[in-house]
Amino acid sequence: MSINCLKPYFVCFFLWTSFMNSVADLDSGTHTGCHRVKQAYLREHIGPSDLVPSEPIYDRDISICFNAATKDPSEKTCCSKSSELSYVTAAENFLRDTIRIKNAYLKKLVMDHIVQYEERLENVIKSSFNRTSQLLIDLYDIPASAHEEALRAFYQDIRTYLKMKHVSLYGSVNDLFDSLFPYLYKFIVEGKNSSVTLSPEHIQCLKNKRQDIVPNPFGTQHYNLSHNLNKALSTAKSYLEVLTLLVETINATDHVTLTEKCQHSVTRLQYCSHCQQEVDIKPCKGFCLNSMRRCLAQLSVISSDWNGLIMSVGRVQSWMNQKYDAEHMLNHLDGKLDTAIMYALSNSNHFMDSAQQNCGFKTEINPKQAAPTGESSDSSSKSGSLRKKREIGGEMYEKILEVMKELLTSLKMFDTIADDICNQEIFYDQDINSTECWNGLTKGRYTEVVEDIPTLLTRTAMVIDPRLVSLKDKLAAMRVNLMTRYSDFDYTLDRGHFQSDSFKYGSGDYHHLTDDEDLWGINSGDDMYSGSGSGTTMEVDVVTDGPGVNLIPTKPINNFDSEDSQDPSGGSSCLTISIATVLMMTLTLTLL
Image (cartoon, rainbow, N blue to C red; front, side, top):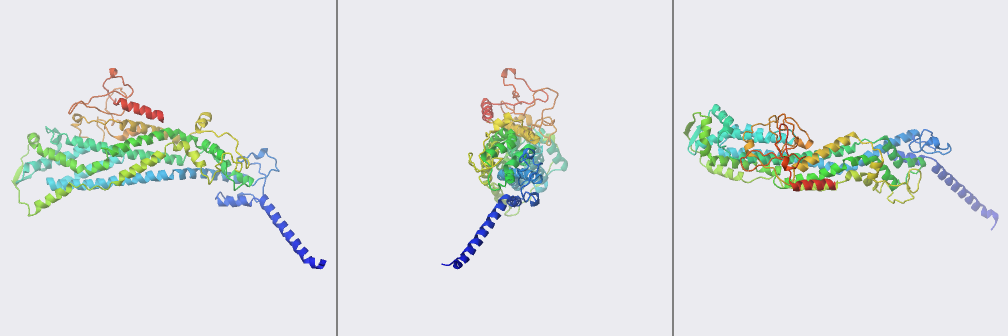
């Protein structure tokens, strides 16, 4: 083959070699330039790309990713002071967003449940009002015009109480029975064949004097009603208060103050690899654990109280499952009122003389007109239907159990939040011994000792967000009060003490036994026995030694020696605690 024939092959070889050299030069330019850093900068929405230099530079003002002042000017990077500051902002946003995302499910679950539970109670209240009103109309001939105002006021007090306002439900029940008594009196006097007209003055007198009538027309029925209603609504109110505080706690952690040191640490973890053009490697697992634990160790301050409160919610949930379920109580309120009225009717011969002596008005009695044909059977049909309780639904307690189950999974969440963040494989290398990860200086193995939270708390001077300190106190106060209030023993009712209980909005001398203002550790003047004594102010519980006896004061919580027992004086209140309860509280606190 002649040389002339080989010339085209030489030309092709030369052109191919030149092309490959150009590609190599391009690759070399790509490797030394910063355009991949610019792409990552834009992709992660850190800021405008012009903050990132096009070519590696030396900026002596860089101090977070590395100390440029100690570096040789020939050691150039793809970072400038401007891009470094934007990385700090991005790092803070990244950490806050990560915390919010981690808390989002639990927060939404609890918030939605609060709304659903409040809506459910409102629906039950409306249904209970309608049934009770129909009961009074159909069975006891008390027209809506006579009872509706008092009944609406009673149910409005229930709503107000559930909205964390201070209302005495004992007083509300008394007011309702006071308002109904004149019409019950009229019903008794009328009998079957007569019609009675009471003057407005007579009605007002019977209403005002109802509590002075001996024996009490309703016996102990309305005391039992007010006690059980108070306990059920108090439990529901406590449940809502706890859930609200849990949401407040999550919100506080979502917006926890991040120190400058923390922000710089997360910046080195997340973004300083960009300075070395390492935009694709993940941070080392150990590097992440140390950075996140140091940043978020302050959250562990509230961890023990959070855990304890979650366990205490189980007590409230247990009470709701047993005999103090607000929904069940409200759904059967008309039946309990019916029982109280029937008691008065069956014992009318015992109190009618006293009622007439207290209110000696003349009563006009007329023959009763015959009822239209079919009315009696229709009324009987209505009264029969009243006995069928229309439950709103049975799925709410299942929802409560679901929320409780999720809350139990949140135990120790503030101790493990840093580890949970670092366990995200999409962001961090999961091999603790990896040599292909970002260690804060270069690509390689992270060699520092990984410290646990207890070590960090004892070794490091921790800066704690004041809001967390305040939350810790709230969580602790709520936890202790729930443990005390919802212990193994039940409260008993001293009927004699409530005989003259006609107050409603608390300004009287008597402490509302089941008012949940105590859950927040609030001791207001209208919550305790008034006086000038110097006893220990604690939450009140009572015991009785039999029906109709006086209140028996018990020992303050800080002194269990029975030999030193003495009555509380002035502002003092006392608490009785069983040995089993003390042991259980001690064990719980020890475990926590």
